[in-house]
Amino acid sequence: MVTPLVPGTGPRTPRTTRRDGALSVWPGSTVPLDDGDLAVGGVSLTELADRFGTPVYLLDEAEVRARCRVYREAFPEAAVLYAAKAFLCRAMAHWAEEEGLGLDVCSAGELELAVTTGFPPEHIVLHGNAKSPYDLQAALRLGVGRIVIDSPSEIARLAVAVPGGSRQKVMVRVAPGIAAGGHAKVRTGTDDQKFGLSLTDGSAHHAIARILDQPRLELVGLHCHLGSQITSAKPYLAAVRRMVGLLARVRDQHGVTLPELDMGGGHGIAYRPGEPALDIAALGPRLRAELADSCAAAGLPVPRLIIEPGRAVVGPAGVALYRVLAVKRTGHRTFVAVDGGMSDNPRPALYGVRYAPRLVGRATTAPLAPATVAGRHCEAGDVLAGEAELPGDVRPGDLLAVPVAGAYHLSMASGYNLVGRPPVVAVADGRARLLVRRESLDDIRGRDVGL
Ligand SMILES: Cc1ncc(COP(=O)(O)O)c(C=O)c1O
Image 1 (tube, rainbow, N blue to C red):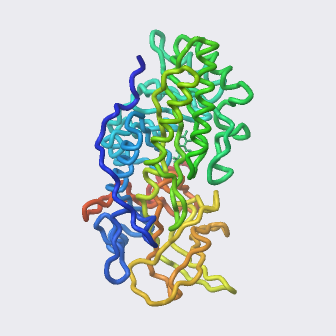
Image 2 (image 1 turned 120 degrees about the vertical axis):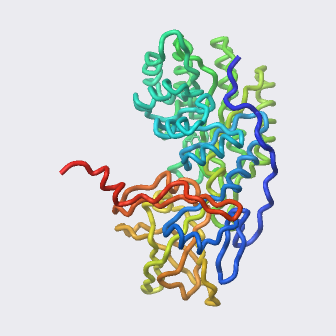
Image 3 (image 1 turned 90 degrees about the vertical axis):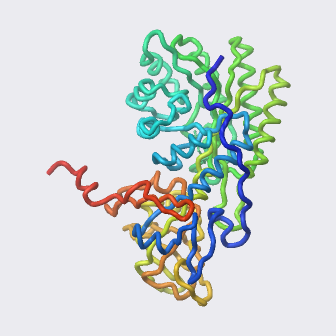
């Protein structure tokens, strides 16, 4: 009997309905105030910027929790692991745990932060295509629930590190040969990228055979993660069929019935009004039905399903606030430069992601006009929103808010130009509280220890 990763419990509350129009991608609590201001979680964005400075990131706690509950509702019998790479701080780990989610982590750093704040290690899965010895030692020392093996060389290395007399639960990351995802750089289900072991060329099956020979490793299931920003259920259903096919081969050739199947994350969200998002409430029953049908056809018991959403839990709960520092009109373009940029949000530069920033805190009747919202960094490619629509009278001192800023911004933030990473503030019930403080020059100086 395999210990369940996450008990199928937790609060169950349906998510509030989304509004249409310009605020459709904002947190559900967002309301317009007088003078062009907006409130999120009952907190005025202008007041928040005045109190914490800019750039600043806010997270709507109720929105994060509501999104966790949508998953618990849609996947009542599955283990839902929040993918910490999207954004992690101690409060986020607490919210995920309180809402009945486990965690997917990718490093000793993510793992230690979660465990030292009280997250149960047995509800954590460790990933990584190149785990360092330190990552593996931390995972074993802290008693992580599962380690997902991603390369042949990891098998023996992990097996010798497991203390004698004990066994570590592991899974195998499979590349099922399915192309899905919003950009070539985030497609991870095919053979031409670095993650996983190929189902097509037999590497996955070969690794499984080797793991089954290791007495200190207990293979509990298979894993795949197709990619990110997937907005249709179809690739997941196709992947379920292929993964069940592999489970059946393992049963046929080794006499082993693996009890778990982890289908990863990658659930797409809308960054701008009108963009598609994956319907999570519909995905749950469809995945479940496909899994039941495929297993029945293969004569297999239905394995415990695991999913790993990151972006869809935290992305739409975040808003980034910037102050406009300069407005430059060149030819047909208007550049609106703000006090943050690629050091707090590298996504536009990495994948050409598009956002819908909005002027807040000043009422204006000026018609909307095309604008390029640029960052402050020393790269011409430091553009946060290339096709924004802002009031034609936008000027230095204005406040710009970028919705859907909760995932893969600060977790990918860099030290470029030593501007310091922005703070993270939680808003809930009309109150704002600091979760992560701004990175100061003292923090930066503190690491600089040699002359
Ligand atoms: C193994 C794995 N699981 C889950 C995720 C989360 O993906 P998303 O945030 O798109 O849901 C990722 C993202 O890279 C991943 O690599």
